[in-house]
Length: 160
Image (cartoon, rainbow, N blue to C red):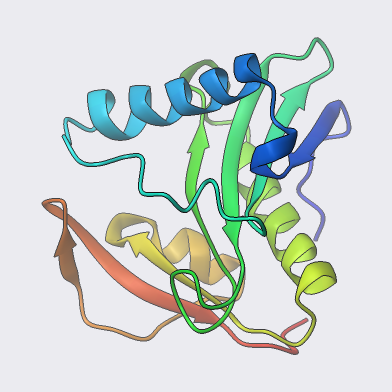
């Protein structure tokens, strides 16, 4: 099932392709949600953004407003397989299914860029049903990361 809205544009870049303004916009959204909104002071800048293979995926509306974002990490950066994270939807655009759309795009990009690799994520536990909808299965007990319950999940290669 395709969940990507028709009126969006994809902006997919590696770190060295991002302009200073684009990088600022992406990092501001991440900090606004993960650090400020979720009241979770942690080291948001972990060095993985700058890796040569990391893909920064921005979902933009037709008028260029940033609606959602995530980053895709190559195998071996966080997990043995491909990974994605920092999945975030800007507050004004929540409740429209954009999270589903950007996760669907991440799965597609992972298949194209790293065919045959499984995708492993460390998901906030309350979102496990959301990720299960996209074919991810829990593979760990719940654990605390930055005082937020998380669970590792995997989407095996070859999953439709």
